[in-house]
Image (cartoon, rainbow, N blue to C red; front, side):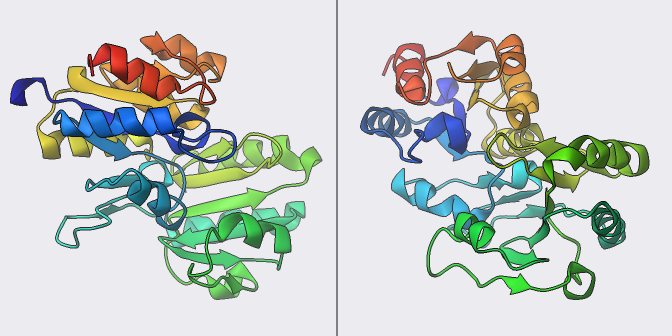
Length: 272
């Protein structure tokens, strides 16, 4: 079995999770079968640790996890595992925050690993980001004063009419230091991480760690933050509900996240 061990990377939203943010029974059973057969299953998500750890435990994983699209790679249950944290320089963050103030955005949020800093109080944003009661509390107040460390990510909640202008500003002034992506509706959030961070970087580290070659990496995704990972994996799989650009780089397209896409693909590909 050892020679045929695969590394299976799962994106969460729109991929492993149904639209109700749950893991379907069939997919969960299949993932367990894959683990029993000796394959290595990891989560690779744009979400922070605190918003992914419940799904990690739900699947019974004991592997490292890729959070913040690769800006944090760590092992939730093994402190001795050598974590990689690649935040953006605080000077860059402060310049971006200044530009956001000038463009009059709704809100800005900074995350340092699992700590959250919110510029303006917002019930709605707190609801989205606090998945459970035991989440660390938000620090609320001017990011210029409160943010004192290099942030893992910055999230901008822009006014609809400013999105193009903000993204153009980020390209014109900060392209060599940061990456930015836009979340899907209804949250037209612009997410910013350090340049060069993406999920493929996380998979590369994990494939070395487990000594599994690229051709035996199976990765599932649906959004533009999955592009590098799906392209990098020997077996890149786009969900049926994925954006067209992702389907174009994927080697396979499976059913949607509402139709057990992951379970169906793994059953047939790994003959579980």
